[in-house]
Image (cartoon, rainbow, N blue to C red):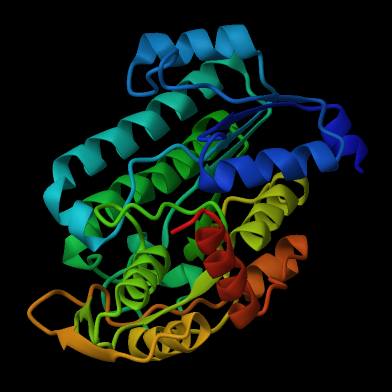
Length: 313
């Protein structure tokens, strides 16, 4: 428990979601007595009046902004306009109203999708502006990256204390397993479990398996965000990850092994791979606020699989 958290009134946007619910639990475990989670039915964070009312009613001195319109490659291709508008407007309005009400600290969650398509691996924060993001999720990635620009500009002009974190793909129990909007790990787990349960001889996966990704267990991500909120107040963006990548082909093979699926895997190369490679340099998080991910990948996958199976799927 920390005196820092005992004295904070925290507003946690997206606090009822996958990552937010874990952060809410960790905040309480750290001694935070006041955590307010705004719900979309009461506050539309894309509307200035609602955001201003949120600050008046919640009276936070720390905001952790997680709320986002987000999903995998498929839904990003279907709704690039919605993803751009929703994510940009929520962030811009929350930061502006925070400035106006004199908020002490703002923590913004960016996305690894903000990095250029062909960023050298490992991705270093200084490489954020080397080029255009991968096309299938560029509107989402760019909208989130504009929040970094806003925070740095507000720090320069107004002395606003806002930090910007860049998590890689998250996974873990409680993730979104909806096949239409889920990210890669829950989508693959559901697909492989379904194929096993139905006795199907083959499971089809998008792309050719050559793309690589880095995955961060949700509890580790929550710890990194809490540590940054408590210990970091600098202008530089900071990666949150594990510092290692795995190809989608190797991931599928591992999931088939853990699930016990004996069938074939067919690759639909007509579907996009997404960004060719993703792997982060995580040294800045370690140096600036002492964060190192702890969950071994196979263990985290097994916990996620077990959670899904426990739901009778």
